Amino acid sequence: MEDYIQFSAKTKSEAITKACIELGVSSDQLEIQVISEGSNGFFGIGSKPAVIKVRKIESVSEEEEMKEIVETVKLDSFKEEAPVQEEKKTEAIKPVKKEIKEPKAVSEKPRQPKPVKERAAKEKQPREFREPKEKQVREKTTKPVKPVEILTDDKDWVTGIRCIRMELGEPDEKGRRKPVGTGKFETIAVSSVIAAIGQVVDWGTLDVGALETTKKGTAIADGLTYQTAQPDIFVGGDCYTGPKFAIDAIAAGKEAAISLHRYVHPGQTLTMGRDRRVYKALDKEHALLDISHFDHGKRQMPGYNEAKAKTFADARVTFTEEQVRKETARCLGCGATKVDEYLCIGCGLCTTKCKFDAIHLKKVRDWHAGTFETMPIKVAEGLVKRAGGLVKNAVKK
Image 1 (tube, rainbow, N blue to C red):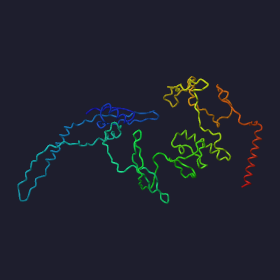
Image 2 (image 1 turned 135 degrees about the vertical axis):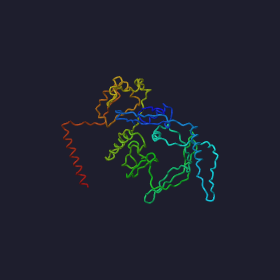
Image 3 (image 1 turned 30 degrees about the vertical axis):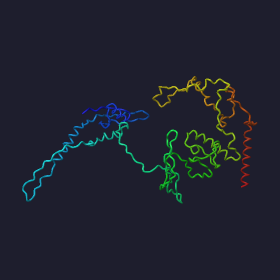
Image 4 (image 1 turned 90 degrees about the horizontal axis):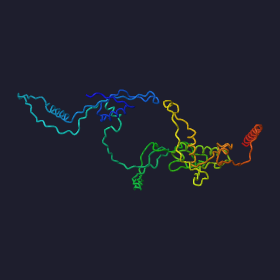
């Protein structure tokens, strides 16, 4: 018997894989003893490797197996019944010798029970070391179908699904054949239907009214205001665009909130002053300034502080002044310019900081704020007007 050899790795399966590679055998030919299962610890702190001991299982040659089979057959053939004596005859029946024929070649080796440890290791070993199994070919007895309608009864209970039979159509330019309908339908009786493939918009108990949807079930809305055919319903996100990035849903939610705010205030327009998101790229060929040094610099990478490598602190180092200059030199890549009217307070500071004199302020209305001393009077005037309006509305009702 060979001695046990010890292996260690992060996990038990990796240790078994390592042992199989170094010894050049599969896990079925190894006797495995687990010393330690190993643990990941907390964020890598206190982790322990998995430790196992293995040794090769002595394999029996085919000749020795055949000899054992022949001896077993011989012993079984000599086990005859005891001689039977008849009442009239006193002579005992002599045993008859039978010719023992050599057994034919056995097609399969007798299966021997595997140790429990070996079977458990085989179930957890990587796929590349498992023995290939025979593929079971299953004939298709039915043609593929595609659901087209959910059938219900008078009480809106599901009774079945109406499906159309599909078949592969003609190959396209790339040689791929897409499934097409045959025009033949069949009905499958069911009691409930669960939409578990892809995504579907569930409007729940919302009274959608005149809201219109596409073939995929998403809402049809205005691309600027996100207002649907039902005037008081505004949409955005996946129910409008389908599956997309979260940042797109956030941007649509902001624009829809602006439209909703204007909608609930009578007399407001939903389109005036809105960002139509029409961006014009910078014409680099006819630029008045030298921009040859733009769009050529590589993205700057932050430094790394090795002293903080094994701590919970951020090991990245901020940009140097030179890195900041190189990074900001790449800002003309998209050529998009926009002023957010909800963030701009009209201070005019940007007009003084722009070295190229590209930003200007234009007066759109003649209005001046009052002084701080006159503010209480203005507030009082507003309160009186508000109170008068409430009284007027109450009298009308």
